Every structure is written in C-alpha cells, then in structure tokens.
Length: 127
Image 1 (cartoon, helix red, strand yellow):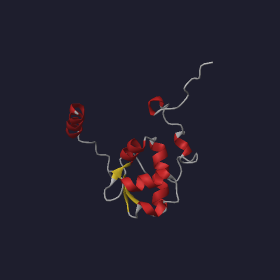
Image 2: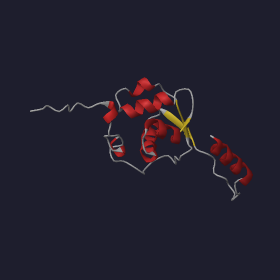
Image 3: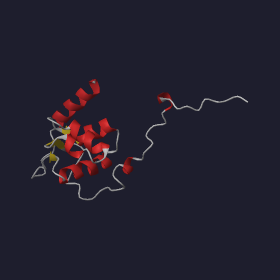
Image 4: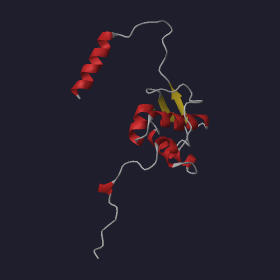
C-alpha cells in the first residue's frame, strides 16, 4: 500500500480560512463613527496597549503609528473587507487608541471639479 503525502505547504494555501466577519464577531453597521473609505485614522496610544486584544487590533495600531492611514489602506493591508475594518477601527476609536478625521462634507451642493477628477483618473490609469 502506497502512502500519500498529505502534508500542507504554503503553495497549497486555500486562501483565508476565517470568514471576514469572524474577526468582528459578527458585528457590522452599528456605531461606526461615520467612517468611510477615505477616513484617515492615526494611533494616539502604542500598539503594546492592546496586546490582550485580537491580533487585528494590534496590526491596525502598528500600521497607524506616526502616520495617518485611510480605511481603504488598512483593509488592503489586512486583506479584510472594508465593513470588517470599519468595525475594528470603530472599536479602537471608542477605546481611545485611534483618532479619526473624515473628509469634510460640503455645506452647499457644489459639484466636484470635473477637470481635477479627470486629471486624477488619468494619473491612476498611467500607473
């Protein structure tokens, strides 16, 4: 009888084994401090303060030490859905580990500068 090698290697990685909302314990959509894709967050306490919390909290704090990061950047680096990152970041804001700044909401109904948006789009396409 031939023995098959059933050992797992990194090349056989099936992808994330934990569903994205497992890290948030199923929480989503409530008390999220008006966070959106381009909200910037920065750590105001050291990452070592959350050593007793889940790994993702510590990773977010380490990423945000000394420089603001958008929620989109955090989601991309953690390979998590934006909705899950909003919950984690919201927890860290509530606990005083992060502060945030959302983009200003125009007080009037001004339209965005189309020329500026086209220039940005052209720049992105060149990347």
